[in-house]
Amino acid sequence: MKRIMVGGVAIGGGAPVSVQSMTNTDTRDAEATLLQIGALREAGCAIVRVAVPDEQAALAMPSICARSHLPVVADIHFDYRLAVASAEAGAAKIRVNPGNIEREDKLREIVAACRAHAIPIRIGVNSGSVSPKLLSSMRLEDAMLESALRQIDMLDKLGFHDICLSLKATTAPMTIRVYRAARERLDIPLHVGVTEAGTETSGLIRSSVGIGSLLCDGIGDTIRVSLTADPVREVHAGKAILRACGLLHDRAQVVSCPTCGRCHMDVIGLAGRVERALESVSKPLTVAVMGCEVNGPGEARAADIGIAGGKTGAVIFCNGEIVERVSAQDAFDALMRRVMSL
Image (tube, rainbow, N blue to C red):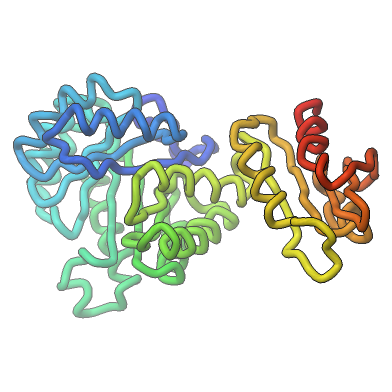
């Protein structure tokens, strides 16, 4: 697979999967936008996209791009001149929707600007903005892929090959199907996400199903969890999905049992307390919080360290072997001492 560079971030060609997000500030307000970009970077975002809806937003782009600590992707709809201006302003990538920019002469101008500034183009297909002409003759997911293929063909004819592709639908099943179909046809980097996924709770579920399924198939080079929430929450969610898929090992994680009638300690409370304490622990450990001494150490044998409740206290175990017995009131402190000593 071809590798492209978005600023200093490699995409595709075996590079680690990166987490992206998008600002929801008014891009014309450069200071507010840069403040949010800073928060996204602090959360672990690798690439940030900003909307460029008009000339005033484009005029703010030089300041934003020059001062941003993340590569900035310009999100363009309809007006190709905004893409050209953003490329000249220092954008690290231009995102265009083929349903909104179909004319080859306009695309040629975008290509010339991107080539001149050595930046890639992301073809961003959304299920809600596919050309009505395509929808009149084929299913939505087929129309999405056809829209992408036609734009890729136009770029190929113009001699431009530094591209990546996104094919976002509003449902997880359709998103999965269209990305799988694209991977069978294309060997270019794919940016994966479910569009208009929803609020933080429902959107995280839909995104986890869609993005996680594809990542476990080996499909996806960058991801965005689209939430109706603070963009920082998108980054946290994206990193959590990467961890769940075994693609990111940047911090300690908690596994815990669902509890049952054998429990003799507050597993729910202890698991939450341990998880909060481990948020700042960068060691790639798995820490188990289990309800009973009978099954806990065995069920959580794969954990590096764990704790399980007993009738009169708790046991701490490492790789399934009991190493210490502690009282219920000392359980949290004893476990954390062991964790920090690893």
